[in-house]
Image (cartoon, rainbow, N blue to C red; front, side, top):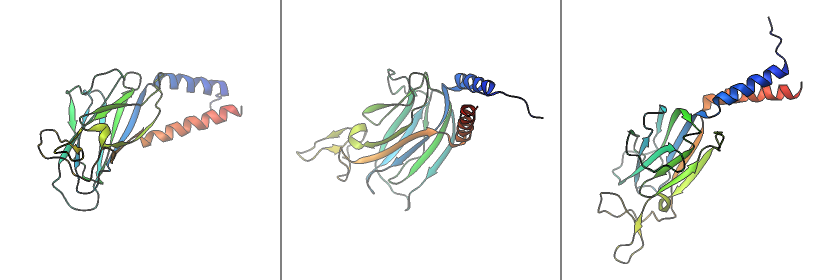
Length: 209
């Protein structure tokens, strides 16, 4: 039996559903080490405070064997734009990323009204907006250079070299402050695209009523 839903009732259902669920999201994060071969590895950590549902960690290694490279810690957290980072509590270690390696993971139940900004960095920290003031996800695709996330210092009058925390060894000569070293993307979790398309189909149907 088909229920006699009107276009108006469909529109009302979409409005109520959107109002209830708009601030929360399930997001897929992807990190890719773009640093030159034989330069350094990223050692990422995610600080969630135990709030989000952290799942679906997928590590994709680049071609080649294991290497022993200097490691640069990379910290991630979600919070408001005005929050101080890093919080240094609730950190979760992620797989080490050698040059060419990539990593994806999913965060579910993200409150985009209270956690609308991604904070990131190694020794220098930046922010990127994830949602507008209404809690609607805006998307993110960043290519970070070494100079935007880590310090460089000159030694002996030479060119500035990358500084690794807790190490007296200077960074590789193949990496300067302008070298792209990390790509960071955030998108809606792929399984949610079906629901988004279904909502779009209903919206288009409503317009024809």
